[in-house]
Image (cartoon, rainbow, N blue to C red; front, side):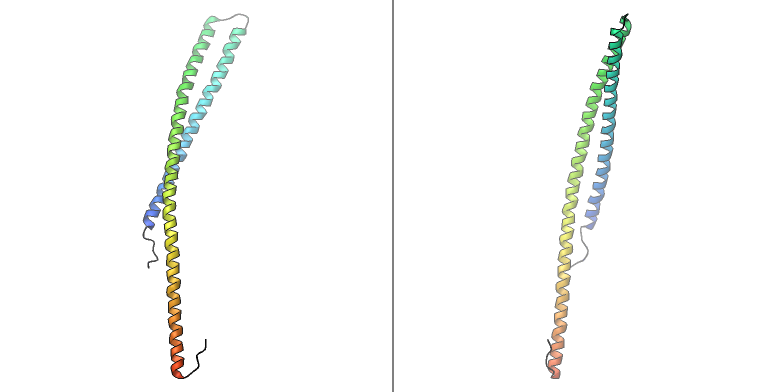
Length: 155
């Protein structure tokens, strides 16, 4: 029996592939976090703009042009929020897809690792049996030599 695990190169390949997929997952998570951060900024800007427009309306003299401009800006910010929301959804989908790829790669690597562990255990058992057979042969030869010399066997 061979000590060498024949699928070691495949195991190394799968481990490297898993690492690369984990890096892709990290990049996707960073992109998603960045997209979520931008969405939060847009939402804060909408809140600030709402408050500014409300102040214009509650002031003593109402500047209609400024209020219209405030509502137009609110509309633009709301459109940006909608667009950024879809960007966040797509980023979340990409992140989940990468996560599933990592999970699958991890499972494939673990299958080979278990196979390697079984191979190592089988080799150790084989080596132990071979060693025990060698010891048994040596004891038998010693016994026969002593018996031929007329000595009493010592067990």
